[in-house]
Image (cartoon, rainbow, N blue to C red; front, side, top):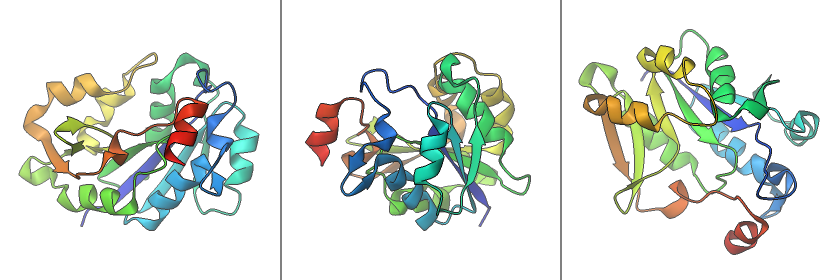
Length: 194
């Protein structure tokens, strides 16, 4: 099976939350730990965590994990700068990268593993997208051949347009689990899913 890296984006400013949401306690531990632990429990070969806002504090809550921590000093310019830093840290022997959002604590290692298991660039399955009730969610797995386009992104936007542009390479995983849509943006969200 091709080796896949997991990139956890954990650099944002948490503007809607009012404090760094990744450090908030959720089900007994900091929110970011749920995402990192799912990535580590999966078959991903490498886990890279991209930090930015309050990076020292995020690193502190991950100090006992075996992840590669990467600083994004340009985090205030938006999501794409963190994605780029993460991709630059993917080892050359990895055939792709799974992009996890640090504020989606309910995504399980099983979902990650299913996306990795279905990945097969030689069979036109190089962009893995989870679906719940037919609606696209996260994380998304990208084959290495798309890294140049991902590295060219700018501003506070992800890669949704690239998914649309490369439909012939997209495979979907219907998970039947709303976790792929649940992100924590506000204190109300935190309490709703606690």
